[in-house]
Image (cartoon, rainbow, N blue to C red):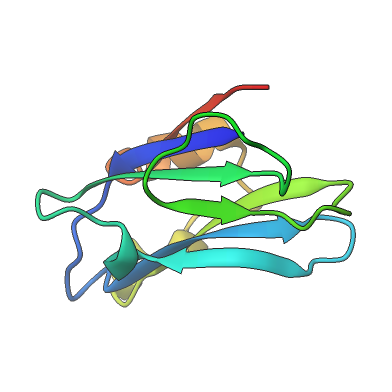
Length: 114
């Protein structure tokens, strides 16, 4: 399982985000949670993304991949309405380090367990 945690301030410039469990091979979405289902009043959040059979510790908000998923992927989608803040203003595909540097206020932490 993956424990995804972070902080997100909903605003006119960044009005929406969600966390999605996807099969990387098929691009099929297996589960998703929009921010209004897990974001606390202070902007913090904790979401667990786990395989279907995972029975260990989870947060209160859980997304599961289908049992047949061979290439699980976690996607965090952010809607950015401010052109000056848009990730498309960055050059080329970004590495995780470049993404964290570009968006340090929204980049989540992820911890894995077996």
